[in-house]
Amino acid sequence: MQNTFADWPEALVEELAASQQNGRVGSKLVSETDTLRVWHLHIAPGERLKFHRHVLNYFWTALTAGRARSHYGDGRIAEAVYAAGDTKHFSFNSGESMIHDLENIGTEDLVFVTVEFKLGSNSPLTL
Image (cartoon, rainbow, N blue to C red; front, side, top):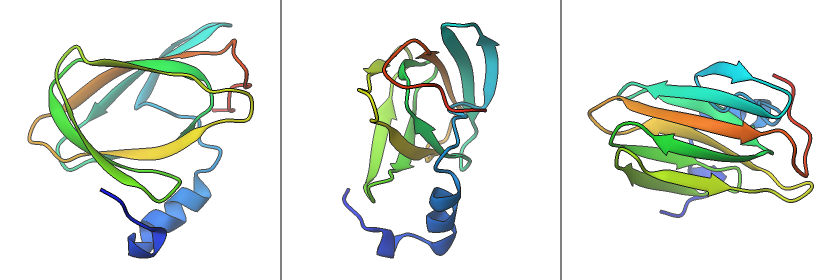
């Protein structure tokens, strides 16, 4: 699904602008060492995780099945269907990043674990 910022609700555009350096990529940071961060992400139906920026190499694993919608910093809107156990890896070269939100558009809670690797091309964002 393609979109432009002009089609977004004003509140989302404002949140995106205010969240450019938000490195909180999950609901709760459960562990952090010198080399990684482990996040739990829990989103009830109809709820969303606000915009956040990924700069570190990372992966997520879905612990539950569900459906979600994300708005991206380039204006794109995408929907996804997850199965329990789905895992996806991301990597970023120096200066690269991705900013998005995540909204649960399904009928069951979405639960993920995300692991960020702090020893990469980019410095971690301050939490």
